[in-house]
Length: 291
Image 1 (cartoon, rainbow, N blue to C red):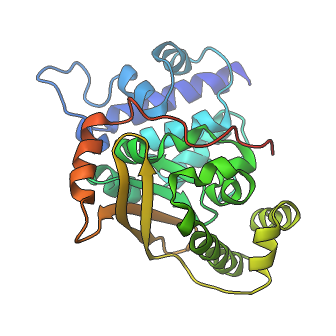
Image 2: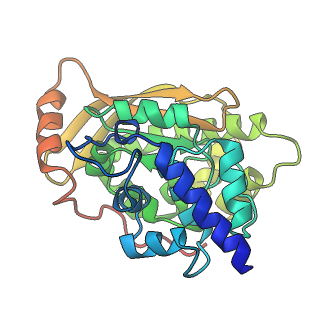
Image 3: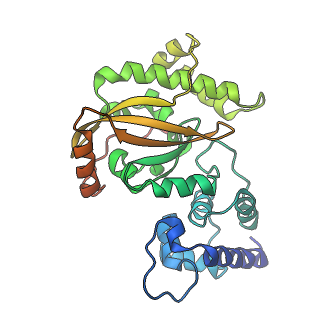
C-alpha cells in the first residue's frame, strides 16, 4: 500500500475514534478521560485486535489490515456504509459482497444489539452468517466469529458438520432442517437474479448433503421470524427459548434475540448463564470443514 494512503488510513481511524462515546458501544465511561471519544485500547478490544496492532494502524505503520479486521473496525467505530467503504479503499481492499461475514451492519442495528444486554442477541445475514454477537450470545452459543469461508454460515455447518447439531436435542433436528431450507429458499428468491453467493451455497449443499437435497426439492418457503429453540448448554443445561427476529428492510440481515419461554425454568437458567458467561464454554462443534 502506498505510504501516503496508509497514513491517511491512520488519520481516518483516529478521527472516527474521537467521535464515538463509550456509552455508544456499551462501555462505562470512567471519571477521568483524556480523550473525548474512545481510547485506542478500547477500540482494539471491540475489534478483537491487540493494542499494539491497532496503535500501529493509527500511526500509519505495520501490515495491511485484512478484510476481517476492517469489518471489525467498521463495527467497533460505528461507521456508516460510506465510511466503511472509504476505510476499505484506504486499505486497498475490495469492498466486501453483501451477505458475507464482512457485511456492513447498520449502526442503528448495532446500537439496538448493545441495548439488549440482558438477553442473548446477534446480527446474522440471510445466509445465517453471524456478523456480531453480544456477550450473552457468546455465552449461549460460543464465539461464532471463528468460522471462515462457507463455514461462516451456520446453515452450511448444520448440513455438513454433525458436531454443529450437538447443542440441540436430537428430536429437534428434523424440524430445524426443514426450517433452515425453507428460509434459505426465501432468501434466494429475495436476492437479485445475478446473485451468485446464495446460488453457490445451494449448489454446494446439494452436492454434500442428501438431507438438504431432499428438503430443497420439496420447495417449501418460509422466512424464520419466531421459533422455539431448545439449546443444550454444557454448563446450565437445557434452555427452552423463543427466538425472535427483526429483519432489515432489504431482507439481507436480521437481529436475533432469545427469551425464556413461559412455563419453563429457562429464566433461572438464563440468569445462571449470565453469571458463568463464556468462561467455561466447551466447543460444541467439531472443526469446520474446509471451504
